[in-house]
Amino acid sequence: MELKIYNVNGSETGRTINLDDSIFAIEPNDHAIYLDCKQYLADNRQGTHKSKERSENAHSTRKLKRQKGTGGARSGDLKSPVFVGGGRIFGPKPRDYRFKLNVKVKRLARRSALTYKVKDNALMVVENFSFDAPKTKQMKEVLKNLNLSDKKALFVLENQNNFVFLSARNLQRVRVVNASQLNTYDIMNASSLVICEGSMGEINRVLSAKQG
Image 1 (cartoon, rainbow, N blue to C red):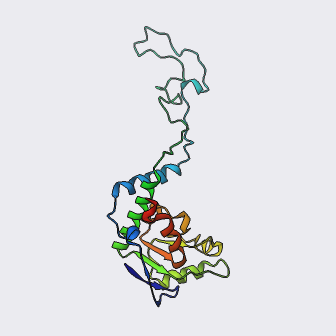
Image 2: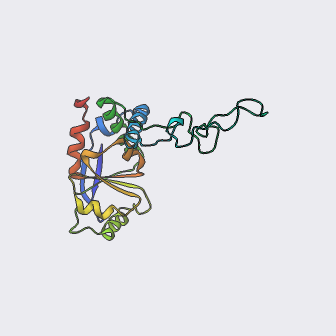
Image 3: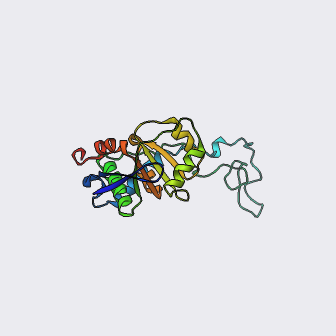
């Protein structure tokens, strides 16, 4: 499969690039995508939620009323969960939400996500580009030239480029990552995927069929 290569001005360069069918034209596996996205979101959870249980609440342990003869239900101290300000029954505790996922499943998920982008005509290859300084205005101009101003775009660069990253940081619908950081969630979350020509080598190396 061939795709045209564009420059940041939105013009065709007259060159094309061959996409590896084992990465960009496979039979998508929806369950692998689900598992990989679930793991990504779980890894990003802080897991620091906490509520006080009965034994941790700072209230007096005095019994509020006598056990019998009041005509109402018996009650203990103010730490009881039935009272406002009391402890919470089975409340959340700090925990780690991370879970293991096989590397082959993660590769399959990324290949499936990339295949979906190709099928939806939502993948574009552009020449490598950089900025002389971090300028949000320049990034907006690139988006306008590529007809992505009103879309959620993911840019995949060959290497870490702080000027491009900083230029896109204030744009809510734009995300910039390196080829080595490319993950299934970001691919599926973006409506348009823009891959720099130089990053294709790293993507092919990591996701090639030889890797499994």
